[in-house]
Image (cartoon, rainbow, N blue to C red; front, top):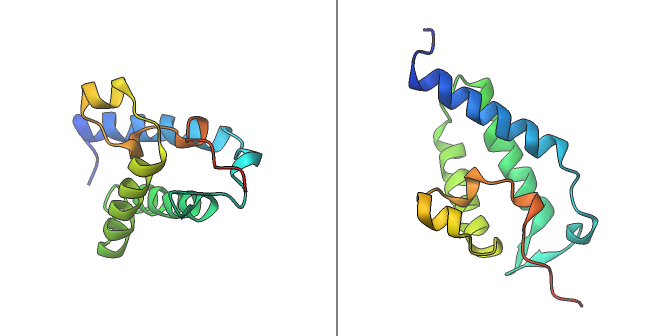
Length: 108
């Protein structure tokens, strides 16, 4: 089945956001850091796993990835600073490049 209309647009948007994510270096300050008791490296790996599975599966995540993605969104909402754009648009934090704007970890 070939993607049409909105599916093509969605895939193009995800491809652009995905490339932005890959191009952004993982912040050194977040390596080994926990925010809100969430390990930032593990969260990044989980997001990568979900996006890779979605893209390789033709836009259809399996049930396990849906659960992981839901958990990632919940965690991203905890660690990302509030954003007027996110609130205004109603988008979830999974639609942002969280590597560029997470809250700073507390100094330990």
